[in-house]
Image 1 (cartoon, rainbow, N blue to C red):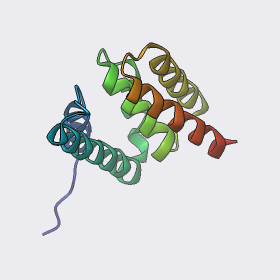
Image 2: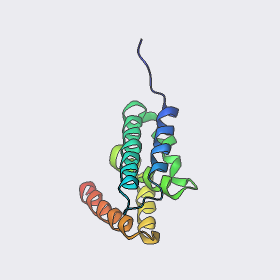
Image 3: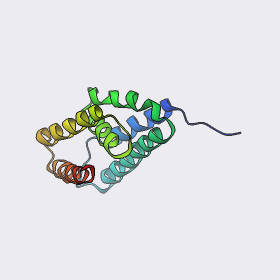
Image 4: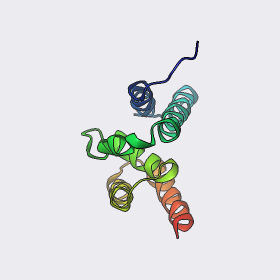
Length: 125
């Protein structure tokens, strides 16, 4: 009997993965491992949503307005990397990432997102 992965399950996996990446301590190997596992978890969930539920991308994009900054930013990244989103969603996602770069206090995160934005911008041109 074939098991089906629901959109709600994948959305929960995305959110749980993002939460695993919050408050990473880059001087602690265990914290870095947990962050990396969380990154893999939320990115895999987003890729599966894109593949299995392309009609739900608009629902996924509602997280661009989440109260949780990390969820907003990770949603934006995944929309741009993995999903066939609308131009409006793409512009909103880019705005969120640029805003995060401007306001982030963590220099490692700020640098990482700046490099990521430069890379994604060059592939979208």
